[in-house]
Every structure is written in structure tokens, then in C-alpha cells.
Amino acid sequence: MKINNFDKSDLSGSFVYFIFTKELLYIGETQKIAFVRWVSHLYTNGTLRQKIRQFGDPQFDYLERLHFLSINCDDLRENFHEIRWKTITQAVEHSLHVLLQTTQTQLLEAYYEKYEPTVNEYIIISDTTRTAPRNINLREQEFADRYAEDIVSHICNYL
Image 1 (cartoon, rainbow, N blue to C red):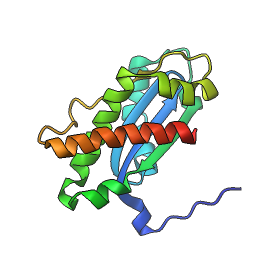
Image 2: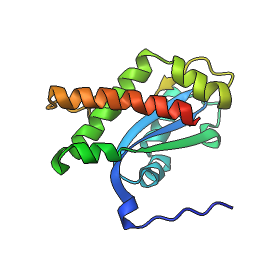
Image 3: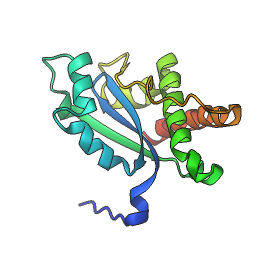
């Protein structure tokens, strides 16, 4: 038995999250605890289900193989003013997309070898074309890039 306890302060924050299902990977961000966002992805017209229909194998039941992973980006909230939290979280999400599209080795070795050993290349089915910040300064972008690298490193160590 596992009991999780949350209070009101735990329900908001800056989060990036990963949804793994077979060879498909969805990366997102939210300003509320990740499970709130995950629920909306699972609705029939939710973004995740739409992307699975678009990119997945119609013969495979991806919803039976979901793995969720959430990262609380509390350091982000300590380093930036409140009005920048969402923008910086979106920048971190975008940096994760870029990093994990250009180099798959770390995640393949940490996650896929353990949970999906038949997968030797994953497909990122989310995108940041509409949500990547356009008005971000160099310091914020450098923070987002370093933070994305730290997230991948921590995830790989966690897994």
C-alpha cells in the first residue's frame, strides 16, 4: 500500500513531466501538480490520445503501457520572479525537447533498456512550436538549457 498526501501548497508549482508509452514520449509543463494535467491528456480528445492516434501503431494499446514521471522545478521559482515562472517553465520544456531530440542515448540507456528493451529509438510526440517562449533573455535561456540537462541527468539516475 502506498499513501500519498498533498496539501494546497503541493498542488501548484512549476512542473515538467514525461509520459512514456512504448516508443512514444510526451513531454509537457504545467503550473499545477502534474497529475491534474495527466488526467486531461487521457480524455478521448486529450492531447496525448490525439498524438498516440497520430504517431502510434493502431494495432498497439498504448494506454496499457503508460509511465508518468513528474519533476517539480522549485529551483526555478527560487531564481526568478513570479511573473516569469510560466515562461521559464516553458523554456525548460522546450530545452528538454531539443536536448532529447538531438541525443537519445541517455534516455534509451536509463529508461528504455529497463522498461521497453525492444525500443531502440523513441519518438517525441509533443512539440513546443506554439508554447516555446519568444521573449526570453540570454540568462533565462541559459538557465533553461542547464536545467534541462540537470533534469535528464537526475531522471537517468532515478530510473
